[in-house]
Image 1: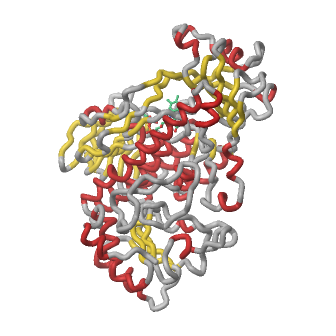
Image 2 (image 1 turned 60 degrees about the horizontal axis):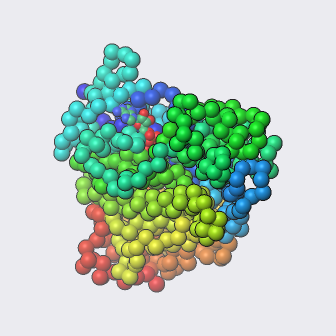
Image 3 (image 1 turned 90 degrees about the vertical axis):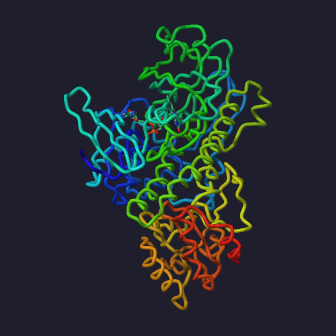
Length: 549
Ligand SMILES: Cc1cc2nc3c(=O)[nH]c(=O)nc-3n(C[C@H](O)[C@H](O)[C@H](O)COP(=O)(O)OP(=O)(O)OC[C@H]3O[C@@H](n4cnc5c(N)ncnc54)[C@H](O)[C@@H]3O)c2cc1C
């Protein structure tokens, strides 16, 4: 029997991200992944700015930049690639002004980093920590599951070898159709409509036909492809035909001549295509009715599925893992209450439902055959969505909400308005002229109290006292003199909505837990921290807190 604190079943992008985050928090764990090699099919393509920020925190940003492509997607709507376009949209055009670029230390528009090049980076990183026992080529089976923990038998595939692991918690990152979720009897909402679709990965020099090869081509031609999208994969000529081309209704999948279909779709009968891989998939919405069952937590595709339109699913999954892991670390280390773990569901399920609704909207827009309808509906934020990626807020959970604060999911998809209100991702400001260190780099493995200044040392004294009293990793960062104002001239106090001697408590996942308008509220730090450790304050406590100036 091998004892660890957490077992992660599934070493796809989300399970591996959970592993990296657990290791950085010092949690001993095992990752059991069935496959030994990464699928050549790119599947997810877009790494959104929040996910890129996670790569930055994990020291992987450069590795990802080395294989990624900055995106400036254009959307062309037409019959094929040679006829005049019906419509052209350029949603990224608005992403180049200094204010937009200042929203994140990473690429605000996101990057094209297909899953087949991202996963090897995550695999190597996850396996590089001493805290992790990472096993590729092993099958996991839960053999015991109770209030005190789980037991998992890991069997080496193709060999007569098995180990049994025991852990306090299990992270189910076992992908779409999660056997672990079904074993727990947890249903999904929203799965009433499913589109059986295809992804045809090919290599082709589209520059021979179009000027913008790394663009999205939404094709609608009843005589050839029907309705489908050609989407870019990388800068080396790989792209994919996605959707449900008409031929799928007429010919069995294994008899389709995809080169002929692609030639007809682009409108050039002798254009060269090399088919790399063909993968059937299902575009559906399915969000688990609960993200927790006893000691097991569901993350990534095991928790939610949504159509790929907009590229939300994997990104949502990476952020699930980031939300869950510090909570597990806190409970295992004894500085957080077990009830904190229930806030994983309360915080993350609403985000999945919101993102899934947006993905469905994007899908409907792309397949709308009516040009006027398309023009009215087309989301300029399709694929470029800093509001959805950076501006989402937790509206329930381990947050000291302010009494007059909206608890609705009222952020916009395409526009991110930085905000220091509780529940939001702590906004970015550079801490040096060289633009090397960001405010968002300061919180990762513990809580941090950000203050512009600490004139009478009241914040320092309170941080020391509370950290001792609660036994929590908490430190003070005085950032007023260091944080560079954004291009609008908004400094730390203005951006975070606190006074010059106010403070902002940031959780280990970079979300604001509590803020105080001035030093007079220093004694309330402990209550704010407790809200982030116990899963939210009581109504009585809320009434005592005036909103910050
Ligand atoms: C054709 C296609 C196109 C897609 N396009 C997009 C897109 O454009 N944008 C987007 O955001 N998403 C897209 N997706 C979805 C994206 O691929 C997923 O969201 C992402 O892979 C989720 O990661 P995950 O780690 O949760 O699950 P997965 O990547 O499915 O990983 C789960 C892992 O668990 C392992 N596993 C399962 N059970 C066991 C077990 N018992 N023992 C050991 N290992 C086990 C599996 O081998 C697998 O590696 C696409 C998917 C497909 C199939």
